[in-house]
Length: 74
Ligand SMILES: [Zn+2]
Image (cartoon, rainbow, N blue to C red; front, side, top):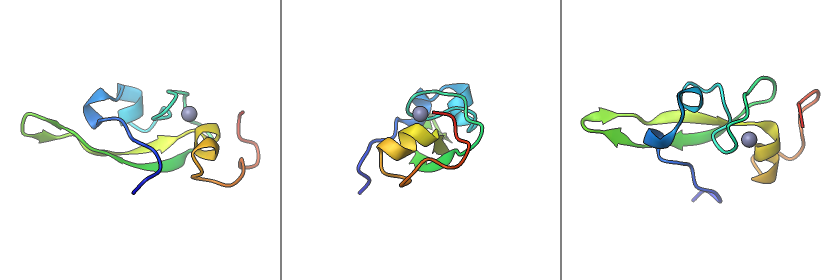
């Protein structure tokens, strides 16, 4: 069981769905993105489930990483 909830895949913005933005705060991801898990969801028969990513500060807050990576934006 994860200690946090991922949004439904059908609620993601296009940027989040494409892995360009943090799944939690929508910050654009550049350095230090952390895989946050898999958001799941269906639209009709289409499985929209997709791997999603967190920015370093959300990842830190959620305990996905122990410290900010070198050079990561705060
Ligand atoms: Zn974030």
